[in-house]
Image 1 (cartoon, rainbow over the protein chains, first blue to last red):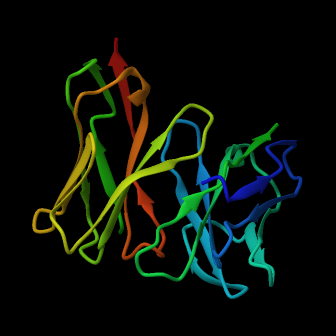
Image 2 (tube, each protein chain N blue to C red; image 1 turned 30 degrees about the vertical axis):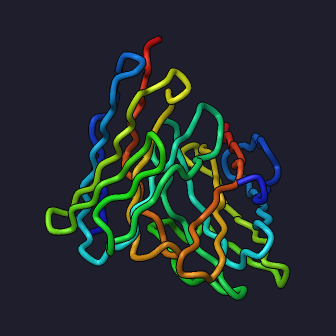
Image 3 (tube, rainbow over the protein chains, first blue to last red; image 1 turned 90 degrees about the horizontal axis):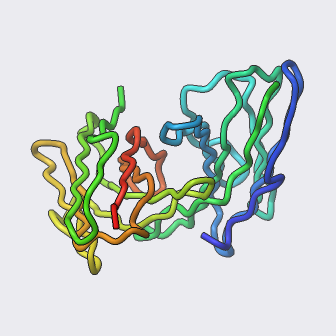
Length: 113
Length: 112
């Protein structure tokens, strides 16, 4: 959805480095989920933040961590980058309505060399 | 564990024909099933979703059916157009706020 923004658009890092990706939710949305989409695969859930706390987590190592700010924006941090971390990182935001759905941002393309 | 399987991986149809993509899920607690369309280099875009309290939902040329007993759901696109060409992903979740478990995707090609 056009209301969800992510930065940066593209990023190139080398193995062992650390990276921070950012997501600003659609207006009115208070929940942010992060997904990793490797080339040719479906998105895989990393974790979800609500009320500045991690509420759910997928099968990703502790190298992946996050944060949510009082304005509901969120960061994804990845430490000790591996070549296999190269992927499109998507955030999806949501509001607490039972009939709403998650809307994806444009993603950040991370390349690890 | 939680798993969503999607078939076929590729689908080629003639413009005007129908296309059907099928998914099965393993978690019986799943109650929300969205479908996303992803064009090359773009974000996944929600095209239709269905909740477990209904068996079918339709939006113009797109329809989704759900069989909770069999744990499978399908996307139907009628009167396909070249602009329907993209990768389509199904997903399942406990509800719309919960983590989405995605299928592996179907690359749809609509031949003019």
